[in-house]
Image 1 (tube, rainbow, N blue to C red):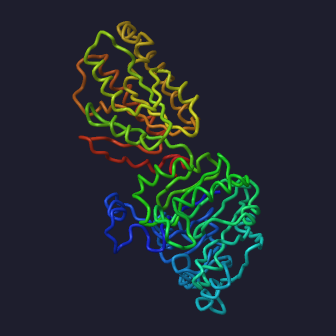
Image 2 (cartoon, rainbow, N blue to C red; image 1 turned 90 degrees about the vertical axis):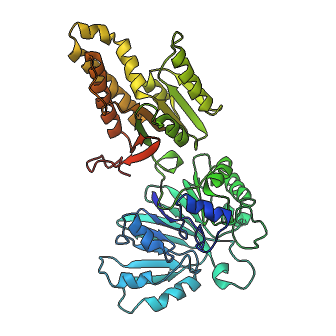
Image 3 (cartoon, rainbow, N blue to C red; image 1 turned 30 degrees about the vertical axis):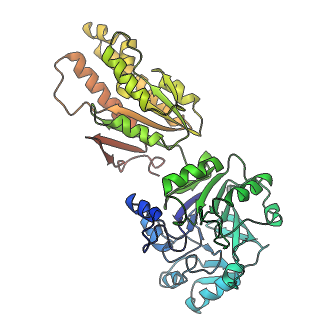
Length: 473
């Protein structure tokens, strides 16, 4: 099951466009904007459709053409903007669009559906099981009661529901936006382990809101109940949604939710239940010249992960004071809880890494130098064995890329860009430049992202249009 997060924000989004609080200001400064909560499952199930959901789909390079079912949690306008049904009426399609939701939400849709519209409306009640066919596959949906009512007579809130969805591959998602803590009877109905949970966390440190939403005080109990009931396990991907400016800025919120096993993802992120953590492991190459800031940039990327293995490929040079000073500076920058491994056997480290960690390799140029030293390459060059050395380095590079491909952890690799300066004066210098250029290109082809650091500034290098589909995610 692949879940595209069309929005992770509350009704007013985050930042609120009229608000100048510290939280909203920080989100604007970071260029982050969250739209009202909605999600797209396997391109065929749409979960909620507020006013911005269709535009988010376009921003993600998708369309609603293949959507066959829309599941509406309730009729509040950030979750249901029924004008999208009019757009559906204007386009021919081979299938009927089925809209499922509580009675009040379905009533809001009726004025937008004409007698000839290819749209079918279905009112649902908590306790129902829906067997939905979509593009030849079957989805089983359990309708659960949300705890969204605040006791103020809001009928649309009182009839809000949650959806537990089982996909054709057997993976299971709980879509639990706009709810407070659930009663034991509801928790008991969610028995089998969930692969993913998208859960409300609207109010952050505001505890006296008196609404049917979760906050940083009530979310832990909500998750504990799911864990006690066996619905949430260590393998479940949990993502916070319906986020508002009552929360601290995103970087701080990530840190506070991490001990709960909850991720904070940006809009248009994808959760893929086929992978631990909800996404395939990432590979990123960071290139730069000497003193360009490439290592500092790579370390900042790694700083968002709790478990980091730092692979230092430079070795120990006790007779080189300058080298010892450089190593000391690198060590001083690294957090104390990182694990440091000094080796050029990078493939072994990659093979031993786990899915919950990040491996930072610094750097490929020193790895290449170590490989050449191990092959006694410099003496062999004097004997004219350039082709043989090149072939052996190519084989080592292929082994490194193979280990990178099978590694379940995220990987950040640092390397020098040495092809932009003067031509080295020696044959050995020219060979090293050529071998590193070839190695960088090979590793970049195996990565999802390549970033070039110039004068401390990162420049993203787009993937080639011919890149493998598995990397162009």
